[in-house]
Image 1: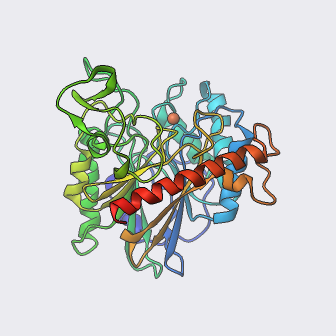
Image 2 (image 1 turned 135 degrees about the vertical axis):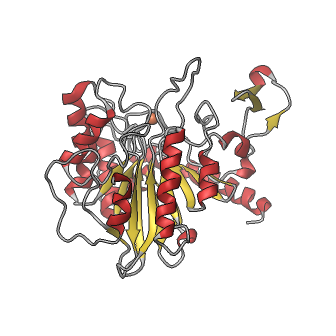
Length: 391
Ligand SMILES: [Fe+2]
């Protein structure tokens, strides 16, 4: 029954504002997402806010200024959202991290990262906090499958007549706890079965055609190394990088990327078959993940855009050259032609009226100006690469 809740919600328009009452983890929130009259739908992405109960003021200010300027229809927190110790502090941390969004009555959804539940509070309890605070659309579609908060949210067409788009939220786990295993967790077979089954239900209700979709999760798919690095026939020791029993070039092939690659991606420690599941269902256009805070590249893997959203958190590791928030603009007439842009902290900080330089932890105008200038210079390099790529 719970597995079909999202599909049922797709065809029922629920009237009224967001309910503020508490509800169980497994229940879908009674909120219908819908394309606007102009056929557009904007999703803002906050990755790795990763702070405790004393949220860095610059993070909060960056969120507020981004929300006010771009007025998204939905916000997605991409995992490693809060890292406070114990229930009370996690409650305060979640309250602080979501306040900019809740204050503006914007619905939001979350996925969990590898760090959220590392502080003596289970993910199920964390999800209840988000839900009790109001505005959170994430629910646990099938509590029997691996992880917490695996769910989907359909977006209705602007005329409200059909499901025009779908959003997947997947718990990509923390650490691989299989016997003898190490490294990061993976998307488990029962999660993929749930995904395929639900995608089929949505397609059946859509005249047999897959409903175009985005996937949001914290950790990137394992195929990232094959996509952006060169696979080597043998290890070169410190001059190569080992992943899943294969050796890869230490640096990626930059012509395969758009944007910054500043650290090695940290995918699951095994090939989990998620990419194959997407290709089989035929619905996923793009995947958005966080986890690797300083990367802001995107790459197309077998027809699916894989997008690393850098951290929004000013109290987590990163650099102000690409710290910021992601923004997706969808057009219901042509969802495959969606627009994605990275909105940099330096652009907000340098705007007239910005308070980012004034709040605790904020840098000076010169600091943000330096990173803007550096980014401008490097953008010329990317343009040249694109010319060689024939774009
Ligand atoms: Fe993180």
